[in-house]
Image (cartoon, rainbow over all chains, first blue to last red):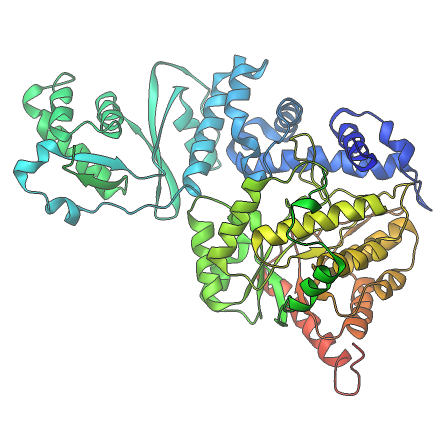
Length: 261
Length: 301
């Protein structure tokens, strides 16, 4: 290893783990000791990354408050050092961290809320794609509908949460006191996507969530309706399927439909 | 790792040709760093700003509003791309995925130039997201020259490198920062972004005269000025970019204009972002000072 490489290694280790080896190669300034000057880099490292997390997780920050959020943030910074050149992706492992690390894992609402914010962030700058319109749909002959397969918009993502995350998210978004966290008997099925430039989400009923997931798996409309028939009134399944589909199209959730196999 | 051997030709003659063949980026006037807080106002009002500098990483994204806004901005204004993660002085292998993403963005934006900083941001697969200092040694210079050449060959264009604010100096440095920058530019053909505030900050922190730095930079290699604010801690200054430009930095700007002449200049605010109107006052001041300093008969650059 060259001197230059070794020096960078020491400099970085001093920031990440507090090792002071590199101080032997740093000069005092005319007005300040080297420990203080090097300390500027040490302090900036954690504070910059936690600041980025505050930006990405505005509502989790509001939920936890400054002190608890920053304590959690610094724990995350220590556990998951950034390995990506773009700060945009630094906080992406936060939901997983909160789900797997004590004491945060004892409060599942934290990882759920982080996962919802992450999904919304991902939708915000996710890949662009065409949006299927009702006019596009009108171009398909009625007899072709059973074979129609759908392509979700690239920003559309499904997320299951085990707590009343949506209600908490909504309250925080409106600067209201959030309800107490509740563990749900059945997961809350969320669909997140971007409408024009705005990330949005809504809760899905169990059968709509099933239909969306299977549609995303390339199952054709006729089969989707047959699957819906197992959830509720079989005679109304086709109408319900058409209703859900209409909702997806008008919400900009689909990027294409085709009769190809 | 020394990558110089992988380059087409690094002989002295070839290096001279690199410089000769590289067309100097154009003078763009007086600009501003584009920040999302001002998107709507800029698109609605076409404010009197000659050009915008965008942070490359903020647009190295799959899609969505940031890229859409950038497309609209670049239809109306010249745009320059300014990165923070090139890590040109890192001893770790270059991140070619990053470089490809940078190249892809440049293909979309068609910036007047692409800049980053003379610094490193991490080694061993980690990224500290900071502009970290280097020792000014012959070894470091050889390394950075070879990296700049590699990056320029990869991107297919000469890059622009900025002097960063530093808080520490290494005891093994063999030359000054300005000597390092001058030699780097001469040998690699890269252009220089002269951050007036950073010179002021580093000069204070290390106890030298900022004019000595300024006078050590070749007149013909500087293509951009940055003007920004900082936080004074008494014994040292931290480059926070969250305050208006201070009077001492405005004075140094006058000296920079006298040495380098007409150079594309911009106001860079990264935190504590004020209303656009407040920054427009600073942009106007960069223009007025330049007009005064560079008036016929006053031109010294």
